[in-house]
Length: 201
Ligand code: ADP
Image 1 (cartoon, rainbow, N blue to C red):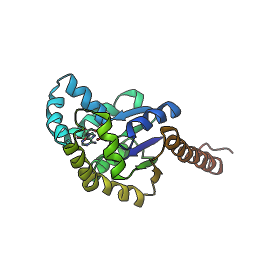
Image 2 (tube, protein in one colour):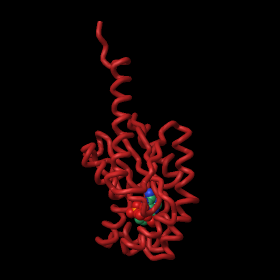
Image 3 (cartoon, protein in one colour):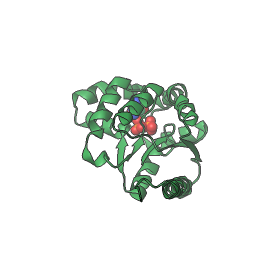
Image 4 (cartoon, rainbow, N blue to C red):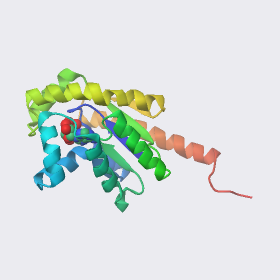
């Protein structure tokens, strides 16, 4: 399965991703985490990304896309993965779709974590990450609205989108995510039964 988790900054994407990869025993690709690793090791990519991240801007698509291509080449991603923070714009979604097409794969499910802006600001101010100042947070929310929100429509039109209420406890939210994922598993095993891929004479 290839699952994409989309949600505004502070929606709990990181926390829920961790729960979901443990539950599904799948690989995790978080572009935010990859950038933070590059920044702390002071790589060339980290230096380039840092200027954008500290201003609350998106890192340019070509930088993100090539980092994702390189990461996905690792064998642990061969059986599927959970994307966390990628794609974050329609051009990134198109780049991902082309990449997966080449491998005869496609996105299985896109999960949106829905949380109102007032709750997001409160949560982000409480977590104190380097890029979590009030000014940057406001800008990241604007960037989310302008560049990432259109992705929801993109995946809705393709019949991939499921929206989950991201308010409540971590367990409540994860319960809702589990319900969606379990339903998907049931649907796909039923369609395999009625349409088996192996031939019998
Ligand atoms: P959050 O979702 O809480 O903002 P992330 O850890 O997902 O945190 O991302 C941190 C920052 O890294 C983003 O604000 C952005 O600057 C950059 N970033 C992460 N993923 C992408 C991406 N796919 N495209 C562009 N920039 C990205």
